[in-house]
Amino acid sequence: MTPEDVASSPVLPHPIEVRERIKPTVQITVPALTMAGISDAPATLDGYGSIDPETAARIAVNAPSFTRILVQPERGAVLSVGRNTYRIPPDLQRAVRLRDGTCRAPGCGRRARACDLDHSVAWEAGGTTDVGNLACLCRHHHRMNHPGWSLNHGPGGVLEWTTPDGKHHRSEPDPAPF
Image (cartoon, rainbow, N blue to C red; front, top):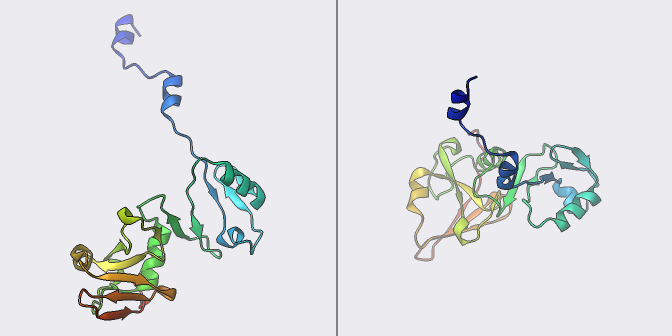
């Protein structure tokens, strides 16, 4: 390599400059039953492996911020990422689609696989990204944005819709193949 080649080659940033732009994160996944104190199943420290629940709790208490990820105990499927992200992880998308089966707007039967997932309480208004605040809505009903309509999530995925004129509609999940 000639001195001219060296002078014309791209200059890479110094390793210290690169490190200053890196924002490290620590991810700990704790089973929901462990968080509830019902189980003593270990947590997982990403990149390390299993850690005991007490250590996971100490790390979480001392962390300046953390992402809460609620997982289904049997398979470990993601059920909630709380307020930490608007984007819906694939496991959570699948859980909502399996639960709903169809568009959850009253009278609509479009299959869940052809629907958007909608935050019932808008993300901008403090809504969470979890199974209790997400519903399948076909593109038409999602874009309507339901002015004047209110939507409440009940146990088991039941949705209670209230129209602008005060009428109530109940939408039960239709867990047909999506």
